[in-house]
Length: 283
Image 1 (cartoon, one colour):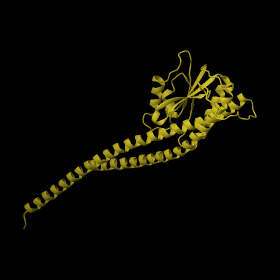
Image 2 (tube, one colour):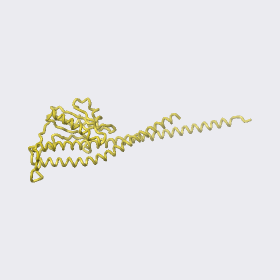
Image 3 (tube, rainbow, N blue to C red):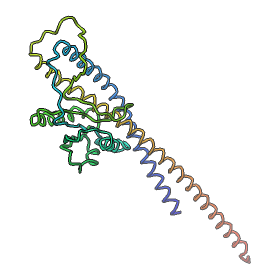
Image 4 (cartoon, rainbow, N blue to C red):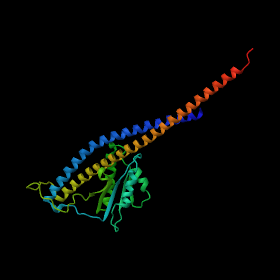
């Protein structure tokens, strides 16, 4: 009896865990829907800014920001929470095995997400760690901290270049250059017959556009990474739930077997008692 009760208790605990994981999976699923809507807007905004910058540079190529690799900064977008499989370990593997950094350059790494930082905290190139977003509503606060940190670095290192390394969906993990922006090897032809009328010097105007580009691009990157994180979380939780459901089914079968054995023992005791009663002398 005690063995079956233990199995019953274990089975009940597994069912409670399954309910919790199902709830987490549903929350992750809802988050992907919100992020999808946000990303559509960011894609459109980024395309509009890039198009405007390209049109501007077709008339003012001399205003283009100079490219520099003197002080490269890599913004690594990981996860704040777990239950997302190898999401963060894949980033670490990419950084160690794929990311190409000139041997004469010392990179500066910024990690976003506590789980990623835990894997890289002993890397001497890690300059700072920023807490990552758990949900889409936390992204603006994360980016505000990120921009403040990048501004601080740029004041100290004016020749800073900025890259982001993140999960991008079907393309896998990619490296995207953010600063300086609008680097084109071939000058694009002008889409308009006349240059735009400016209230600022061309170089100052492009700096303002670059600020808008960076802020919009960071939103797009973090939203994309968070979307992939939740996709990973859904798959990871589905695998965990299936495993626990299989284990719960096995426990159910064991409970049934033990219950049948208990019933058999009870019947044997009843029959034995009945036999003893029949053998008892009457009168």
